[in-house]
Image (tube, rainbow, N blue to C red):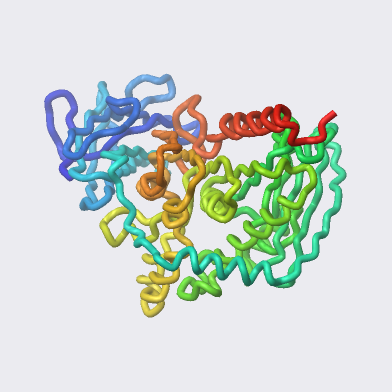
Length: 458
């Protein structure tokens, strides 16, 4: 990967790739802004990538002479670093990547004793990115055995209606716990106004890795608008409704703290296994609801929620749509072919701190990698990816996307998307993707049920 920058006709060492537009801090005298020559930030292998970066003062005018430090990290490319000076015109920086992957640029400026940063990313031959996660012949056998163990344990259903004046009128919300003494799954169940037996699709939603408990705000409106049964699942065996102080305490509890790293060398003890089994337990429960239409399940989530959505689509054959935005647990093995590895960067962490566990972890994590779930899906899948996401790097999302079989798949590129919000004004976040498609699938199911008499609607 070769890089250089240019101000006018003068060339100097620098580097990068797509750039973003971003205000770094309110009240800051200097704002970094950048743009790529291409709105989509997509390139071919070996092709020159051109972007422009500038510094602006509070009035929005070019602030020349600002010292801008940068680093560039790319899949399978050596790290680049250096400094450029902002000018009266944008500084042009060019680089290239000679193989499929992504490049991430970090730009910083020091001002008033503070360092402010912004990021940029570009994709190269993204549809040719290949997952490093190995095929796992006993993947289906492993999960069949896990589900068999779970279903052999009796489960007691506890369902309590939630009273909250903020809940949309007519919508019913229930706090549900599925207690089996081992996995104890749960979440909030939301039913639309005037639910009808045998009429409604299921929309099961999943939360990211930092979430404790479950949620119903905004999902009440989804249930009403989509005429759907909506369920937001709790990642852990905790109360579904917790206060912020309780969340802080739970995050430090032995049960939850560093759960994504614990016992990764043993697939029977890895906490992510328990989370995925909760997914299956909740699906089993939802399918017993008399309001379900008996044929429509939709799974949606982002980050670790995206990984859960992929697992849900694998577990449930009646899934008609999976929305997996910036999925976590994606291509753990990427580092083995000189490309990014997915959250939580497990292998690098073990190599640095517990190298003796690494060989076993590399065997274990095959069963929990989003790539291996994706390879087996039969339903339509849509995804969203942030090009400047450093939590779930875009390379790992495309490793999943390109592993999906068939043609019923789509992906939305958020070129200035972080792990969530976009730095581009007016651009929707990575995790907002999929709502319209979920609504369309729900409407299709509702209309189909009506036309075929699949419900007892009056």
